[in-house]
Length: 344
Image (cartoon, rainbow, N blue to C red):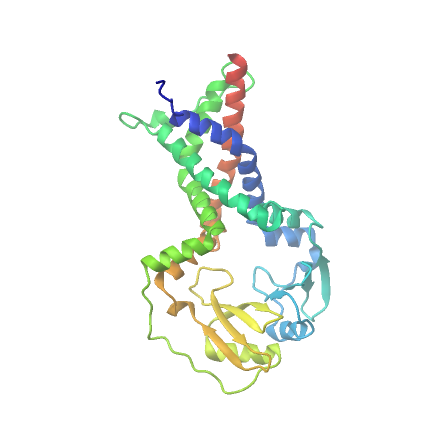
């Protein structure tokens, strides 16, 4: 009986790289650009360049006029009040509550980049595809590292690159060395992007798994609930500040009277604390992330790592380095493969 020969590690890496190269390029381009989404919007729409953030009082007045969708409250790096209606249109408001502009879905490059990066512009079906591709991408980078890892003593020459014209006969050497060394040198940022990206696609599973492993909670946290109704957003903001003092209100849900808040030391840019009111204006729910299981708190750190929401400029440069490497790796890898195949 003839024995079936399984693909080698090199073959797995090669074929996964060829299949995933276009997707990796797409994720690298869109993700790297979206690191600077707010700056990009202000460059493309100069009327968004506000001197100071819109006040919460003005934000509450605007929010009272809408009963569907959700809205982002202003921050220093995003000073406008941004409201997303039920049709996915983004409305921007200025310091006096004036309407600055409306961005419809797929109406500009920023919108296209967001939709492509988040779900390949295919809604929920695209997100399912991204989940599968991200798992294969993890196999790709791990096999690449294993293939590169020196079998004997490690030396600096293992990272050496000799630069020749990539279109010349010796260009194959440059392409191979550039591919190999880029993957090795920038492996940590690449792995961080890939692992966090995969975890975001399977956020519920990751959160449930970590919560099962680390179920510890802090039962010492208590909250004082004000005994008054809040039918308008300004009143809800005041109650939120009383219930979770020092927490910053970041996101409000216009159809449900719910809001998200962020503690100063919390990683997630929009926070994972929730306060909800019923139709009569009674406070019904308080969710303080500090009182949640430790595993759930760790799960909430995945997204901030992926988008460089912590660590300032240094972390942004690390993530950007990973994005640039993910641009270079598929280009050099596919180019080397085609040149070698043509030579043979």
